[in-house]
Length: 452
Image (cartoon, rainbow, N blue to C red; front, side, top):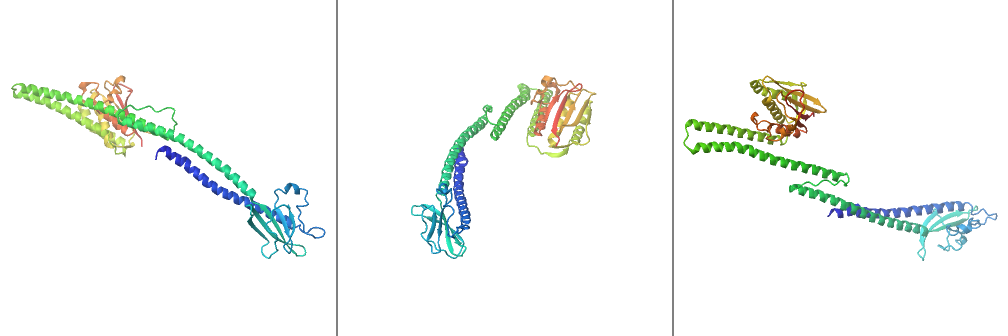
């Protein structure tokens, strides 16, 4: 079922049907309440009338409403009052023109009062109260009050008509509102579907309309837009990485091919062949370095196994692992910070990132200088700053160094993937990696990780 029809059904038709059903129950309750109120009025009037039926000077039974000065004003709606004698004959009636229910009513033993509903031949329904009364001398009489239920039926009919009209109007309004809402929701959902299809096909991501309400659908659309932008950026980054990787791989392969072609062009001595093979071996080592770095970068972007661990201990282990290279280069290596640093992290991934930071710092650190690893807890994050005393990174290139295969100096070694891996690991943990201003000479790379 389409969205518009579902919203009409559940937002308009079903509520209106429920309102109509509730209306039917309300009508019956309303009728019962009105009839009960009428019964109470009849009983109250009978109680007042019965105590003074025989207070005439001669003891003759009489009705008090008939000589009342208000008799003319109330006769149109006052309940008909009849008094029957011991033999069942009618002694008195008011108003005289009231319809007759019983010609004769004999006193009888049993309940003092009895309520019943009678229907005349004209269809008029009457509520009849019959009360057994006795004169001061103990002579039995019957007092009967009759009220028309026509007013009750009329009130119930009016209530039903008005409520039905209101229910129909409510149904029409609900159908209109739900239709308008459904068309708006359908339009917005179609926009989301088109956006997903466009993103799947590699098209541009459409901007989110500014006039849409800020609700859950808007949140979904914003999330999808953000995801689509990230996917597109990741795809473009992947394409650039593939192109640069192909270029990095093509260069040593071309050199190897050229060397082999020259060696095969004419007879070569053993020494010349040895030279060619050594050159090819260096290029093979370079290819292996590129392939290994690509594998590490791919692993850094995979799923992380987050566990609670000691970040300070990890930094000490990484520094110990880099000590031999630092000693070979004549560079001192020092880790400063708190003795313990509880951090939720993938220890292997963070260790690879720190190893790359240390290798990068040692590569550019001059002999006799110091590489300093600083650990600081700030704003619920751990900050790992690796500081060397080399030539530093120009401000214009501080973002470029995180681009795969980007190297500031071609003769410095490496393949240009180390800092890319560091940022990939940091962002996978919900942190980041960036080059910040150094307090002294050299470069300062800051790795941030969540504290918990």
